[in-house]
Every structure is written in structure tokens, then in C-alpha cells.
Image (spheres, rainbow, N blue to C red):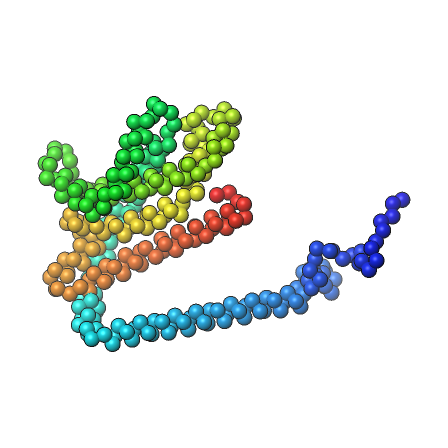
Length: 312
């Protein structure tokens, strides 16, 4: 028989890794967890500190807001500015027309967003093709991204929306909505392509080597191993690009398309009051905030997974 020697003063039933101020059984004969007084006090302190921080933040926000309000309303030209930019009568007149035009912006976002993701992925894959035989494809893809990332979006829109109809090509549309959507797709696909390329190049070469060792072809490795990981890693920046695209759909109004911005512009041109622009801006903000918060939530979730060693 083997006898285990106990150290002097050691409690054989005590777990050396357990906090002496916490226990799981306590005096409950059922064995249910009963928090220790130390843990209860610690949780009470944390809740009190959280309430205090919330109260300080709320008070600071109120003070800052009140100070800004006083600065604005005490300005010498506030009354004139209020009549020009914050007239309730023109706001009520513009709101239904702006909402009607916003439906065009939403459709452009959905169609152009899908086209941008597909075209951006194709360009990114073309830029990451290996082997000297694919050099012309890589060069063309690089030239495309460099050109459209350097060209201002407003100039691209003017060239496509105003220049293409001037060519009078047979079978080519002159619809400003379609032409504006094409310009948006050309510009944003260059940005999205670089996002996808960064994700593809972030995959460690050992992933490709392992896939090839298992018998997968280059195409199968790209499709089943590289791209799924690359896309998951680049979800937050992709969502940020879509948020920017949603705002820039308002630029198609330069070609005459009646979207939310153009609807506001028509009323401004008739009334010489700029309140409809404020209404259109607030509508875009209300549409963008949910997408921005969703992007922040996805980013925080992926950061937590990365910190815990989860799949990203």
C-alpha cells in the first residue's frame, strides 16, 4: 500500500487553485453554486462603477450639447440660417419626394453592390494568378485598379454619364441611372479588388501547400481553401466599402436621375430654400447608421474570435 505524505498544515480537501474567498458548495446541501461574500462585493462594486461611468457620460454629453446649442443660436446670423436651412414647411414638402427618390438609391446599392463584389473578386483573383503565362492578365488587372482608384469618382461619373451618350453608339443605353451605376461599379470594384487581394495574400503559403499535398488542383485550392478564409477575414472592410457606396449613389443625380438628392435639388431650385438638402442628408444618415453599426458588430465579433483562437 502506498501512503501519500501530506504537507504540514495542508487541507487535503482544499483545491490549491481555488480562490479562498469563493466556493461552489457553501452550506447548500444540494451542491448548487453559492457565490462567496467577496464575489458578491466585487460584482456590486463593478455595477456601481458602471452606473457611475454612465451617469458621467450622460452628464458630459448634455453639457457639451448645451454648449454647442448656445454657440449656434447666439450667432449673429442664426435667425437667417434657421429660415434658410431649417424651415419646417419646406421640410414637410420635401420629405415624401426625398423618400420616393431614395428608393432609386437603394436599388442602385443592391445592384451595384452585387456587381462590385463579383467584379472585384475576379480582378483580385486575376492579380494573384501565378506563373509567367498570366503576366498580361496580372498587368491588366493592376492597371485597372491603379487607374480607377486614382480617378476621382465625380470625374468618372461625368465621363460615363455625359460622355457615353455623346458618342451616339448603336445599342448603348443613354439612361443616366444605368450609366451612373456603371461608373459606380467601375470605381468601387477597383477598391474592393484590393480588399480581396489583401485577404488572399494574407493566407499562409502552408495552406496552399497542404491543399496541394492532399491532391487538390490549383483551382480547387483557390476555391475551397484560400477564398473562403480570405473573404471571412475581409468582411469588415468590405462592409465599409458598401457603406461608402450607399452614400455615393446620390452622385448619379449629376446625370439627371431623380434620386433623393435630385428630388431635394428640384425643390431647392424652385424655392431657393436649402431645407430639402438637410432632409436628404438626414435620410441618408438614417440609412447609413444601421449599416455602420452592423459593420462595427461584425468587426468586434471577429476580433473576439481572433482573441479566443477561433476560426476567422
